[in-house]
Length: 228
Image (cartoon, rainbow, N blue to C red; front, side):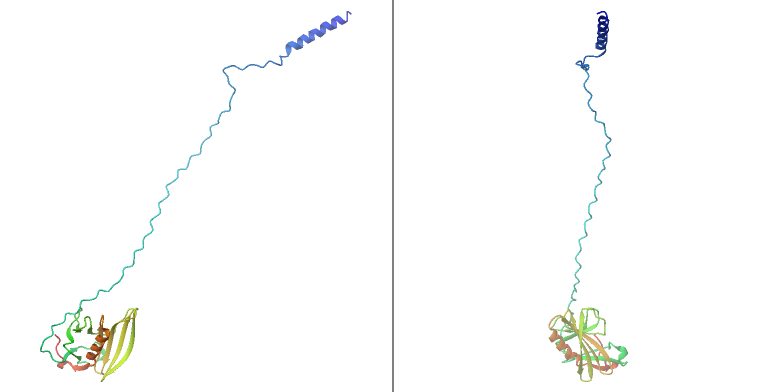
């Protein structure tokens, strides 16, 4: 019995020491009323600089093609013909210098005869002598030499024999339409050329012109008729 009592006293001392050292399991330390649980803070992120959009250049207006200028030939004024005199001869003469002097004998003019009621001797718009038709406007005979022609002109050649004169005849077509004719004639003494122009009545104009040119002859200069 004496041994049991000291043991019980020792056991109660050990239990009291352990109870004071361990906190109660149900007690939770209270937080101050003014403090709230920490919330995660948004960390400020550095924003990248925004690129400023440059204004896009306005498209240049495309050039509007201008219509090509239309080339039109302005017709020359009709020739100013002298008034028909009442006492004109049946046939008048036109004397002039051959257009091919190097192929003609010196000292000679050409001569053609014409009906003064149908033709009039005058000067053209360039101051050159010419025969103008009295009934067909723009039907004109002028002296002419060979010249270059534009690409749109097509010439058909023919040979015409009238008495002792040989003519090289050229019919000129512009875009398919007969526009003028050339006559280069030689009788062995002179070599000269003529051009016949017209706008309408081409057949009548050419027929009347050939009547005049068929009288071509060489005349000595001292016998030539002075030009008006």
